[in-house]
Length: 82
Image (cartoon, rainbow, N blue to C red; front, side, top):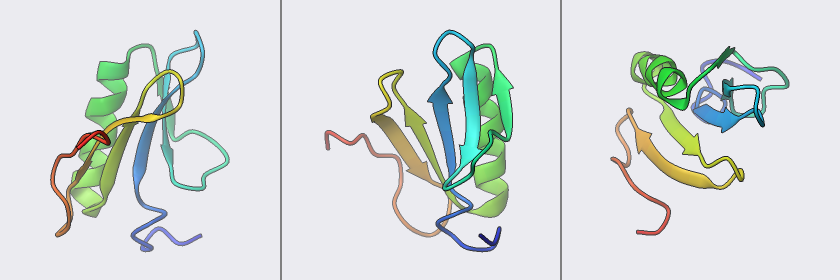
């Protein structure tokens, strides 16, 4: 997995089931960092996604995608329901 790969540089904010919210890269085995709140995790992941021009995916606590935003040249903010 290479960091320059646009797919693997995507950031995900996922629930750690009563242990906070994790920021992970696509296909990563371990979290980049864990936060007590989803808001803090989103702020951290957003900064990475902007820097790397990748996509930020925010997941519900059930695991499904709540919303995502592409900070590269592609899609803009979008909810999966759209």
